[in-house]
Image (cartoon, rainbow, N blue to C red; front, side, top):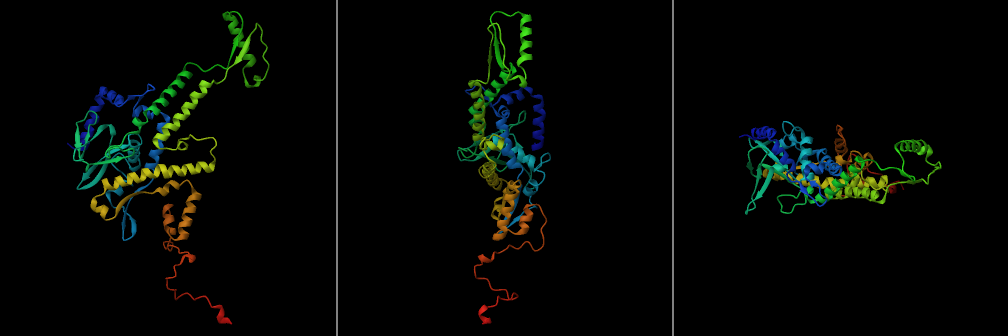
Length: 414
């Protein structure tokens, strides 16, 4: 049975298996101390988890991912290899490179594992198909050999070898072959965020808090209630009447109400849960719109840079190493083939920083002007591919150019 036939059959059977769909939604849900059921579906309904996942997905999916070959001290981009063609165009019939990387990045952000089937054609990878993580079970034998057991809902179980599966693993990784999912490890923080949000929603669904209490002696009949309510609305409602004195009779008392300490602590708890979840998912709170009021533009810029260094860059290096081992043959790796994220793309929004980077590289001689133009998606210009060499950094070993007249010696004029 072919892979696509197997998957199509699984989807067709799944459409008829409503009980199984319900079981899948509940599978893996684990009640936490706060009383919430936390699984991947319910966790994504927490806006902090959704926002952190989006940040991780964007940092992986939108940065160019290319194949290079390093030989004889030179690095050349490879464009005629199946891997480079897939990651610059279509990965399979229904996903381009960005869509495919968005899928596996979401799996990595929440489950810390992504499983991709390598479709072979004549000994080469022709397509990549990502499996849902909850379909896959990884088993390790006593000799440390692995096998991947895939059970799609409603489909038949199949077993694949490590050579057929590209298994991407993130941290924390305790046993070396399967990473611990962040939803399970941070379930208490996510669960508390869920119940505090629900409690706040129930508060507003049951009625907003009143602005004050007006109490009088005795019992008011229905007509008196209506007259008093109308009088209060006409007398004290509205911003233009907020400072006017209030005349009361019948020993009446008016007590304004404001946010209580309990309400304030409730909001503070919700803010703290944002930081807790962001901390667990490895995302700076400022990246999801949560920041301290004392933050300045300069400090915010440094925080964005810190996210690129400590957030995006580790994901890139981890995926590169995994792709080199799973998508390239041993012979190709020996011949200098390797994958690479173009991290400079992360500086697209910082024109001043990018210009300073190019300028220093060109002046110091480790970057050519045409290489800088290539980074900016500009065509090369003849004569700009030679690196500049600062005069004050000559090592003194170069022979003088005979076509250039030497500087005259001042002593010859005496």
